[in-house]
Length: 283
Image 1 (spheres, helix red, strand yellow):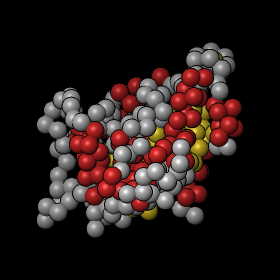
Image 2 (cartoon, helix red, strand yellow):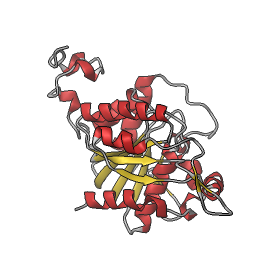
Image 3 (cartoon, one colour):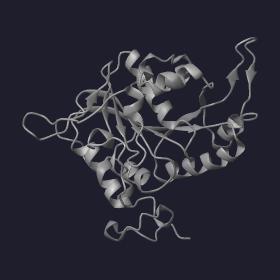
Image 4 (cartoon, rainbow, N blue to C red):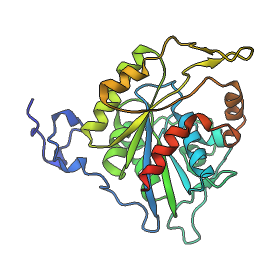
């Protein structure tokens, strides 16, 4: 199929496979943030499918960069399945600036700014039953109407897959790089390919792959046990020319901390490689 089928943004079908690479809708930074916001780097954390621990990984990366002395925010773009507030133990309602011109992120215990739909709902367990365009609009509001003031790293916790919200984020936010979260199963490797192809289609740099639930450590002998079978992350990464930035173990202590809203107390050592890649973005 020709790469120059749809060049008119007014008739955009949001099917990037039919568009030329110079389609205006692809331009990064298309929408400005709030005028008083100052964000140095935007990093999207994505996965091809749900259930691989993407939000957990996003939260841990934010914690790691905060521990390194950076100012950090998290934009929870998973509107229908928000979990970031629970991981950090933060609750709404989010408040506005005194002049009412912006929404303020809710700060975690260590000063990480969080914005999520759950911080705007009266009932945190109420389902968000919205159609795609409304969900995409909420994500845009989190970028344009929230005051992200003096943030070194703004992490975007994406919903799984390659639908409306990832497309909106890539078209609206000036994403400096994405981290792809996977798990060991071979099927996930195939799904990772879809995320890689979408990122390349949208001209968004891929920083690397983080494999979650890579192994469990035997409490008696310390042996690594491949609970979900042997990992395929190295071959998947090699196929697309990407680095493997971290392989995270199954950790019951991490799960307990997450359930208690204490993700900021968890050990972030396994993410050292990913943290180094993020630091390199600042130059």
